[in-house]
Image (cartoon, rainbow, N blue to C red; front, side, top):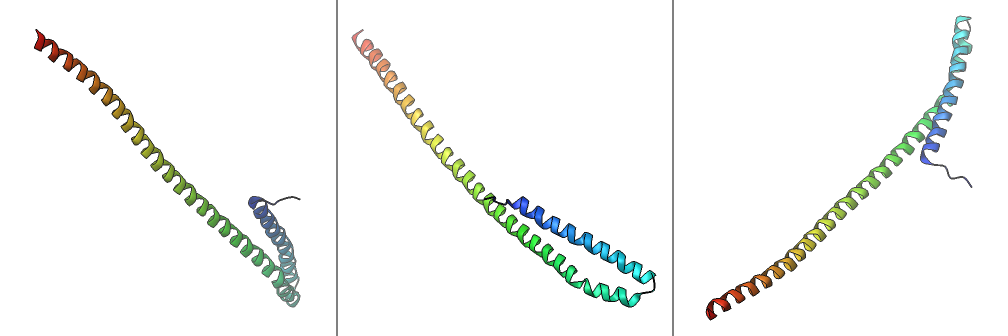
Length: 130
C-alpha cells in the first residue's frame, strides 16, 4: 500500500490542472479557427460546451488551494509546537544550570569556609600560646 505525501498530492492536483488547461487550449484554438472560418455560432456553442471543463479546472484549483491551506495550517501548528518545546527546554535547562551552579558555589563556599576556619583557629590558638 502506497501512502501519498502532501507534495505528491499537490503534484497530482497540478498535473490535473495542467492537463485540463492544455485540453482547453486546444479547444479554444479550435473555437478561434471556427470564428475565423465564419462559423461564429458553432464557436459560441463550443465555448458554452466548454463551460463544464472550465468549471472542472476551477474545482481542481479550489481543491488545490484548500489542500495547500490545510497543509499551511498544519505546518503553522507544528511550528508553534516546536517553538513551545524550544522555550520550555530553554527555560528548564536554564533553571537546571542555575541550580547546579548554586550547588557548586555552595559546596565550594563551604569547603573554603571550613579551611579558612581551620587556618583562623590554628593562628588564633598559636597566637594565644605564644
